[in-house]
Length: 234
Image (cartoon, rainbow, N blue to C red; front, side):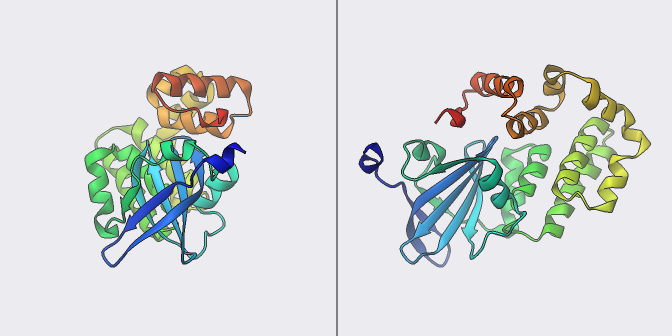
């Protein structure tokens, strides 16, 4: 009965070539990243990636590939089907513009840290060639290593390894001797200690293991302190 009273969440999509409206049919929450699926009157499906409640990128997709981040979000994340009142909270603006792909990562540097950009790159594999995304993450890794920021460079290589586990160069770098002490830190330290050095890692770890009561409570505490919605209570 209550679902019948909730109107579908409508969204207006603007590109250089066209403007179209559609309804949000479902969303997936994956820690700080949200994926919105929109269906138009012509049965075209658009997918939009949000990070920390801000639109990153989106476009029309004929198919969501197995193994992509979007596929992972809808299988391993928290899925919210329309109609649901929380969908409006997931979409800050009901009008979105599809950005220029060639300028996207340059624009992201204005709003996000390099580490966040490396992670964001892993969520865009439905829209960009995977090799191109690997190159972007690699650039961040080598930037940190040249700057002598070895902890940060280790964090980036972990992101890259999780993104492409079969990538030989990432495996070799991750297992190099220069990073032994950081492996030990992540294996032996408590979640609060790791949180101080790598909040993104802890948030993703706790989210993916949210069935564990201890990690669920820890994640709830992080999100509550940062005024984030707890979507699993929806």
